[in-house]
Length: 219
Length: 217
Image (cartoon, rainbow over all chains, first blue to last red):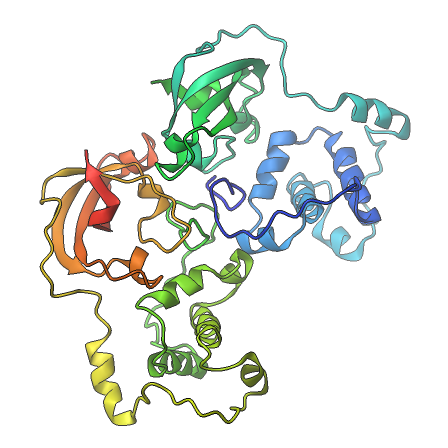
């Protein structure tokens, strides 16, 4: 979707303030937000792309107001409600309903280290023919899906060159909507900034974007 | 600037709820906001208020209602041009000063001022770069200043539908760089050109575009 999360090329969003020695979490609740999200993800009721899409659907005014982990919590609650893993009454009271079923969570303390260490890779070890090769000129398609996509607005319709083939990965656009993983090649595509932003941009600068096969057409 | 005000093509902004018999003002303060904006003969260029609205932080822009934005930016422009001080705004009381307002709008003048509006058309000769029926491309430009060329039309090919005549050029005028009067055209873009093959074949968008936004295609 063309939402406010797609910030590439936007102006006047305020300065990016980098911290020296930035901690992993700024507050204990952020660590808890991360932990709860991972623990609930282990039920496999949704996937990484679906949680990203859920965060993109936060109302724009709230999206800008919220911090990173606030968005995580809000989106997690939405996903849990959608999947009937929690009821609005339980959220309100902070206590489980008397009738709610008790289950053994799929993520136990001893499994945490393994999960964190290996992550949840989106790469897939399946044979898929690559549609493009290094050095080839491609055009990013002009698509404007209402669902999730990783093709930023600013690159659509623009011509670039395949820089590198990263291999085969899950296709976020279909995966986020539970329409299947549709594994396909992902490429690093190089775009001249003048192609993206016009003649005012610096001649020597480029942007490299990781783009899926389905986002590209020959140019 | 590529700001949050440039909403064309955005998803997830919520429903548009048109009102039946919508009043001109929903509350009394909205009428006052409008009146104040008309009454203040500020020392800023034509259209500068629009640019000032665009400079609001995105979160605030989305939170404020239409006339809230008017008041916020009117105050900002008045402070910027030293018509008032922040202290005066905070206290609601004027500090004695020698400088006088440029012009005080009287009650008698109001009907004619409102009727006349503040037209952006200019009665000066300017050669049009394009003619009706001609194919054009909207330039791919991303100025940090004000522009009326929406992001979604940049780089896209359309056709000149109609020449509206000569108007001041907002990109330069709002920043005080001159009015640069030039032709404005209604340019027709096929929805498929703008949004890709998923868009309806028969749909078009007509965008009013200035000569400087266009190049031959």
